[in-house]
Image (cartoon, rainbow, N blue to C red; front, side, top):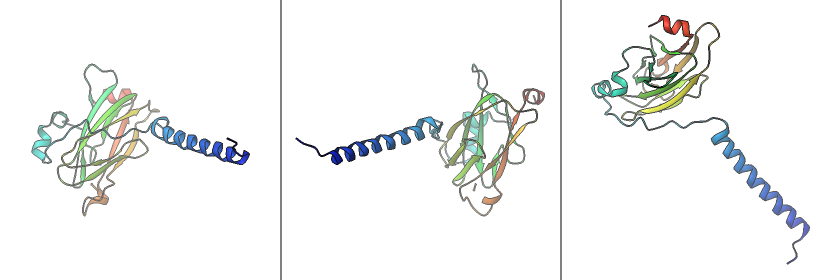
Length: 179
Ligand code: CUA
């Protein structure tokens, strides 16, 4: 069968386009380091009592990330997003050490909220009854603590625009001094 020269050319070009599209999708999914929010955190009844009894939330007594036993430089922090504050985060900043990998668990006892740590990869919806799990890596800080803003980006009621907090990455000295 004879295929015309231009037919072949168009055929080749459209194949190339398909490869290009698949490449951009693959890059977006893998290369750019994008991570989906995990639902491995499980579920919890959306009430203060049930959340306070949950293993991740009951161990979070203050605003400091908690070392994960048996793992180097790994920490976890459990945050309750509620109308209209992050606990911890609002008032007192969430504190994490430099050079660490921090797993955040977030849930809500009332309505849907958001939790975004500005300038990081952390941005999740916070759904009552669901514990969102998300991991974030922090590098070395340059002298002073690094401060990140935390905002709610789902409309959650009259105080939505005031719902914000802070996450601070402390230098090793500062982190150990705070114990
Ligand atoms: Cu919480 Cu908006």
